[in-house]
Image (tube, rainbow, N blue to C red):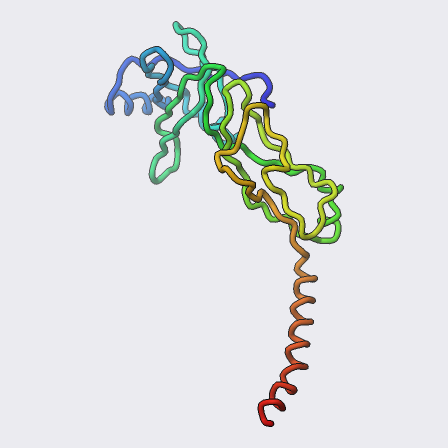
Length: 216
C-alpha cells in the first residue's frame, strides 16, 4: 500500500490564456490547472526542474499528491494529464484533479516481480515474458497501491500468472472483467531449438516413406 502521501508544492498563477502560459514558461515554470471537487478551478505553476524530476522518477500519474499552494488549503490531487512539447517531449502544461478520500478513480498500477531466485522455471533457463507491465485498476483515493507484487516462488516452465493470482488492495478491482494474463514462463530457447530439431528429424525420416507411397 502507498505510504505517506508526498507533497507537491505549487504557486498560484494570476494570469490565464496562451500569453500568460508562455510567460510562465519563460520564467522557468510549468503552468497547470487544478479542477474538480466543489470549488472553482485554480490556475497554478510548478518549477520546471521540480516537475521534470518527478516525471523521470516514474509513476507520476498513479501517485496521489498533497498539493500545497500558499493561501489555499492543502488538497489531495492526482495528475490527469501532462501535455508535452511535440518535438522536445518536455512538459508544457499540467492538469491536476482534486480527490476526496472515498473518490474512485481508474489508474494504471506498475507490476513488480519478486523472488526470482525461488522460481524453478527461471533456474532451468526459462524466459519470463511480461505481458502487462501495468494493470488498470479501479481504486479509492486513500488506497492507491505503489505497485502490484507477483510472487514467482514455485512457478515452472509453462506456468502463467493471471490477475486472479495477485492480491489486490481492499476495494480495488481490474477494469477488465475477466481473468487475464500478466506474465508467462516459457521454455529456454535451447530447449525450443532441440524440440524443433527433433521435429525436423521426424519429418526427414517420414519423407522417403511418403515418396515411396506416392510412387506406388
